[in-house]
Length: 286
Ligand SMILES: Cc1cc2nc3c(=O)[nH]c(=O)nc-3n(C[C@H](O)[C@H](O)[C@H](O)COP(=O)(O)OP(=O)(O)OC[C@H]3O[C@@H](n4cnc5c(N)ncnc54)[C@H](O)[C@@H]3O)c2cc1C
Image (tube, rainbow, N blue to C red):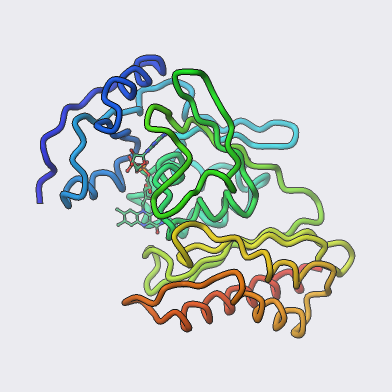
């Protein structure tokens, strides 16, 4: 199918971009890498009045390393994340997730901002952002505001971003000594969207898991935090009994819908398999 007719603007400054968003309201659609949006347009699933191409805006494609955190501009591509030694060193959970995003051609154009703003529940970065409780920076007519990942993802393709705001950056805490990060997912074929995925951040003291934050993708209408399962892990040595207790608790955290990919029961089992894998990984690293 062909995309419906739309106007196209490519602002050179943030002020200009925000003015277009204000002027067109719900009729404006931000264009970043186009890797999701162009498909949506070509399938006739959206018909915006105007595309506001933000790729010429200055300052949005930088990776800045601070004392305790790393701030990544919205226009940083998946490929740039993958090639970044800073991301590999300081945000290893994100770095582990990148190769699971689609294929290289898509990773060359798609951006972290596009992925987070789209809020596809099957996407990797929203779950990573939730596991690390990243902070998203939004810029609107009144200036910038920060929203935690926990408050950003509201539902199926729905976020706390207002239509006159741009997502400009995301800030992740730097990994600390004693933390173990594990990203894993199940797919039918490499590069496909995940049937189920888990972004897990553990803190280990001696041989005991002191904190655990488990964020699942493809298990609900948004990235899902599995707090009950995490509670079963905290203060425990990563053993078969610990894993079994956490796996049982997952039923309190997740209630996936059955669909053509799998039954509700089967999906919960996938989540349990990924939990077992990630805690076993912690066991091997202590
Ligand atoms: C075949 C295929 C397979 C894919 N597989 C995966 C996968 O396995 N995992 C995965 O996570 N993704 C996957 N994707 C999507 C890909 O990762 C996209 O790059 C990403 O979701 C969107 O990034 P983008 O820069 O291309 O955004 P665009 O397509 O340009 O925009 C996506 C949406 O976000 C909005 N938007 C973009 N940037 C901003 C911003 N800065 N502020 C506010 N709103 C903004 C747009 O208006 C639009 O609604 C796949 C895509 C394809 C075509």
